[in-house]
Image (cartoon, rainbow, N blue to C red; front, side, top):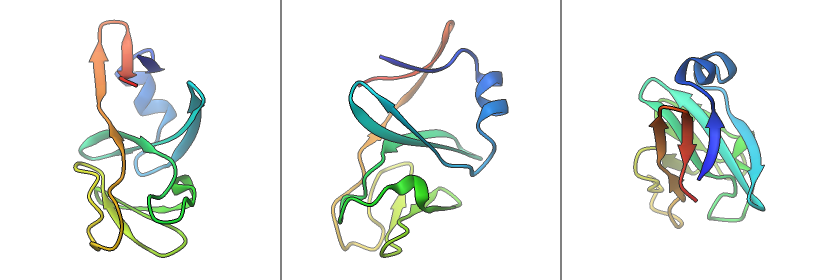
Length: 103
């Protein structure tokens, strides 16, 4: 388990809506974003050619790769353009002692 924040309130303060943040944990690169549907954590590399998705744009519940503008659904990980593989998503777990992802 990787701890993201101590509380949901802390997450809301430190992660503004639709703001992307890249982080490294357990030797891997991740990105996270908070949308109206919650906090989404995913592998930072685009499945197409490896661009950092932290440099992309958030449109609703999708992340848009900055290189080729492929769209990935943040709820399913699916490439909605049906051009490349899907995005690796990580479930965010809210526990008494913080917000975590399983890795």
